Length: 306
Image 1 (cartoon, one colour):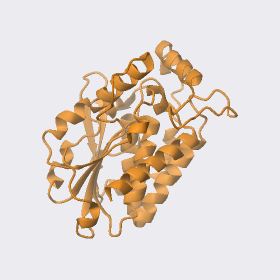
Image 2: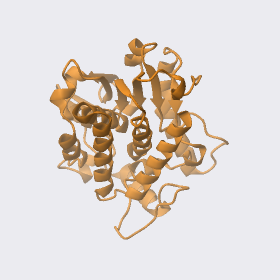
Image 3: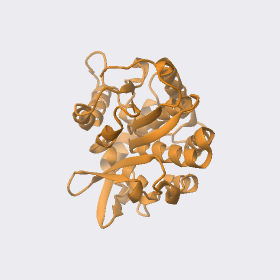
Image 4: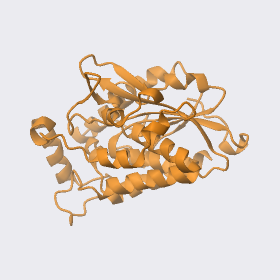
């Protein structure tokens, strides 16, 4: 994928069309990228697509943008991720335990315990009341009625139909809290979200993120793809943990590679080499220190592009 000239060489006020990939807590990397992009003078948002955490970032940024411009978008994103970081950690067994390190993203024992639990028990066993801690956070930060108006930036978020295995793309007219929760419905943690009688799981399985909706903006806006699943990884994984991690990255990019073949050249920002061997379980790590670290990486990679 060819990288075009830096942002500085573009005319001031060039609109952006953003493709935001999903990946659980790794979406904090995307937050860092957006946080830096929103500081560009005369930044304009034309459209955004997203899956899973990318969909959450897209709707929260756009709703904040409509309420308060770039500052409103930055504030909304920061409030969302700070509240996520305050939730009880899924992987950490005790709040006093400090097991995050920058090289691996989590501690081994909590991650192994989590992977074992989710391979044996389903959310229908562990979460029979279907509690989703993201629901009140997203509901409090997003004005869905405003997003459905014709003058809002275009939004496209994906979810996966459980029964057909096909992607469904929700646009502005279809946007709702349930649509966002469906796009971010990790099947190991949450029960399927039913919309119009259809059950949906995480959109990252089928369109991560959906790029076809950005074709009309090619040539009119700067198309920028923000990845959390690296496209490349040096060397051959040899441990079970690293093999699972790389398979997850490849699967997360499979649908994307097909869609990019039909799209013109676009900018791409992806995580640095040092963070590319995180275990799959780290995507469930909402420890605030980990979120802050990923945010800083995202800002740094956006700065490289600028």
